[in-house]
Image 1 (cartoon, rainbow, N blue to C red):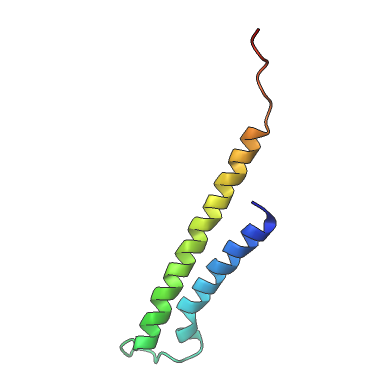
Image 2: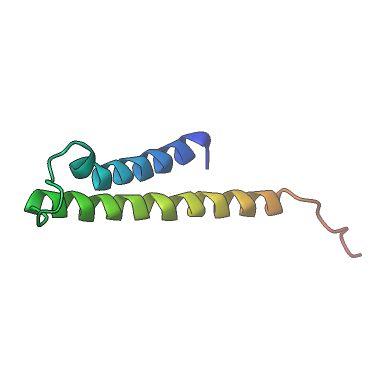
Length: 79
């Protein structure tokens, strides 16, 4: 996969992390209060996106390693 694929899953991961942190960083979730429905939604959706980005990164990495092995030295042909 290309650099665009790596950038895409990196952006997906970063978006998920931001969604998890946003209610607390921006002050929309009061400290010590029970989580609002919006906070729960942000944390759940953000965690799913971050997990997909994390899995996607290792999928891209595995594909790159498979390509490296495929382009590696080939054994000599048997006659």
